[in-house]
Length: 309
Image (cartoon, rainbow, N blue to C red; front, top):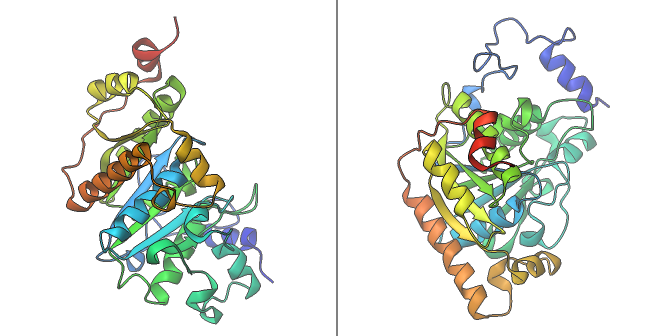
């Protein structure tokens, strides 16, 4: 059986350089250009980025649920080796695309859609791309194989919204691959220095990919934060805008423990407010907005703006 490491070496070349004829996708980037045949199609595609542990999976899953409640056909793709992005939608840990491909020696034609696509809350389709074993392979290859499988099985033709939930703030190499497919990138952040520092690096990555792909910045989602004053200060300097604000509420934490989206929790006034904010955000994202021409700050400038005395 072929391993993912061997597949990646064969794809990139044993010297570590791309095969002849493959162009790099931006200055200094080691990621190859997107195969035009792997474009997703007519669906609106969003990539959710942010600092590790900031709540991207919770945000992505509740956004998927909100889109589905608008009557949209939704596909959520988790891009994290933990493969827990869709946990609250499906109530279980799903096998990853890479796990499934390994069972058939990477002969994708032997797979059926039900081997790697699973139904979730309110009809949301759920896929966990997973990631390569530590120290081997490339996350971009994993994302590429996932999209390829979905295309081969015609699963993107009847989809209105695709949400990529992307690992942490790793914006180099393979885990920037969803930016090659996305129309808009949304950044989840908290109202603290470390989260905003990570957001600044993501802004840099999106700017680099925007030179060769359609992806543009869509907005900032404040999460787990009572206030947004530090986020607002950064946004004012860079040209970003706040799209939604979710406070640090216990009901949100409990929803993960109960393997549930927020739309399945016991009603309460504070929960109703959060549900309405998710529905408002989904409607706003569906209608679309002008891209944000944000200019990232230098590291020193972030320290001067927000940082430590």
